[in-house]
Length: 153
Image (tube, rainbow, N blue to C red; front, side):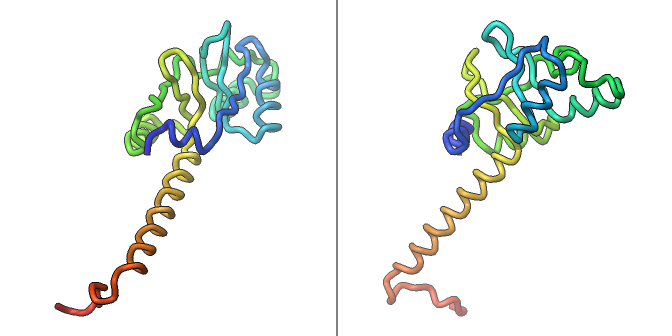
């Protein structure tokens, strides 16, 4: 399975915010849309990524004033990205190695979507369920005289 296939299953809705917006505005979007991240866009280009990790760091650093901090000050600039043709196993290794729960998927300079570790787990589970159903159907339809007995040979 490739990253692009996970995006097809997930859908292509993207939530973005401008870097000059305040952190409380980004958190409002994240809460309203039940998101763990938003992509930071400026002049039609991705310039960063904001996840709940950065929000918590800002809360710790700025205390009660966290909401007034510009997104630009806390976002991850130049985030690691995934390629749409990357294999899901490569993606999982990358996400684990870099401690990334959310990864933007880029095709050149075009943002295709954001993949979360949850999206990856769900896609792998669905793929395994499909393979299990196919194997069970194959065994069920196996000609009687050729069915394995499960005994010793």
